Amino acid sequence: MKLLSFKKGIHPKEFKYFTCNKQTEVLSIPDEVCIPLQQHIGAPCNPIVEKGDEVKTGQIIGRSESFVSSPVHSTVTGKIKTIDSYLHPAGTKTQMIKIQRTGDDDWQLLDVPKNWQLASTDELKSIVNEAGIVGLGGAAFPTHIKLAPPEEKKIDSFILNGCECEPFLTSDHRAMLEMTDEVLDGMAIIMKVLGVKKGYIGIENNKPDAISQITRKIQKSDYNFTVIPLKVKYPQGAEKMLIEAVLKRKVPTGGLPMDVGVVVNNVGTAIAVANAVIDGKPLVERIVTVSGDGVTEPKNLMTRIGTSFQKLIDECGGLKEETTTVYMGGPMMGISQWDLSVPVVKATSGIVCRTDKSTNGTSYPCIQCGTCVSACPMFLLPTKLARYSEHKLLEEANKTGILNCVECGSCAFVCPSNIPLVQWIRIGKLKVGEMVRSKN
Ligand code: SF4
Ligand code: SF4
Image (cartoon, rainbow, N blue to C red; front, top):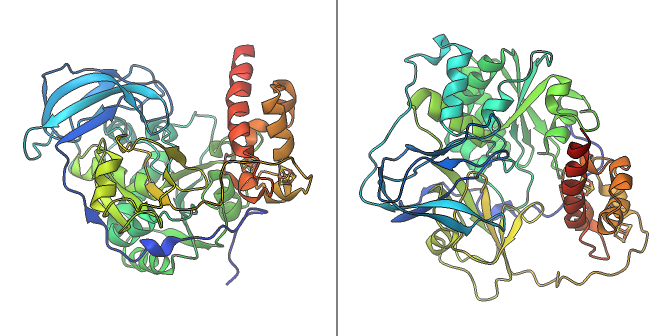
């Protein structure tokens, strides 16, 4: 069978073998968690608890009045220790709530209907919002907003993203194998809210066990979803690439999937939706892949949000002496960490530890080889965009399409001169975005 894909892209080494065949383990609940008030795209939450308050597992401790936001919950049963500014794995200091655990879980669950199939879409959307669900593939966009597209955007298809194209990461792969029912139920709930009949599950062909397990389960169920095996290519899991591969639709410049009638959600997000709507459980935990040649015993760990990176690494036998880099996320789009006291957040799909010494940070002049242009899945000119960003030529960067960059890192990965293309482009995107908003 011919596998579907998108044009261009790259083939980095996958390194999935470290963890793809290992059953997910449940990490013990930590004695202390540190919950950032911003774990999503949009407005940060304000604390609604005070130092000394007692909180239950699943209790909302921060929320915002802003529409583009998502509440945060206590992930243990305990006492508020401090509300202060701490280091976030995104690299900045942000306000967080530290909670000292005082005992076993005493849950504060959400009010949910007995049968979600009979619930109204507004009721389901409200549960997804109150559960604090955001995109767990790494983008952390509030899910309740994705489930409420404007009237004029007619959505006809939903795609569940099971690609997990970043090297090393296997948390979605394991979730598809170990939590198949939750994945399918979550997808069905999302499709009911959106009112769409066509549901696709895109999975890269390097996960044949997940493809056959999901296909088997669908055949035995009432669900009418279509599994689409996809070519193994990076960044197959980027929304725009996935839509192109599965539906042959092109998201327009500066547009969103809803502009071509599609909503995309990640596998982990579907599980979170099922847990919230069926069991009343807010988003307090997720699977985190701890992998790479820099950690002693790589694993997938079901982890409470707010647990320190250090605890996960200790559970995996610690870092090796020769470890050079620890990323939150994979090596393509991940963020380097220098302090392992940072907490796991909703967007922490993995902690990847490398011993790679090949990149010492030195870059060389561009040799005009064009390799970055050949790799870019968005048909951009990365070398120009990076130069415009470096020299603050924001109008030029905007005209050259910097806002279309999906920050996949393919250009930087292939550059023989080791130029930090994506880093420059990311900075440029932020500035161009601000410029465009200030003009509107
Ligand atoms: S310019 Fe952006 S979209 Fe294109 S390869 Fe580089 S990071 Fe990816
Ligand atoms: S890959 Fe690197 S060296 Fe080649 S054109 Fe792009 S920026 Fe220049």
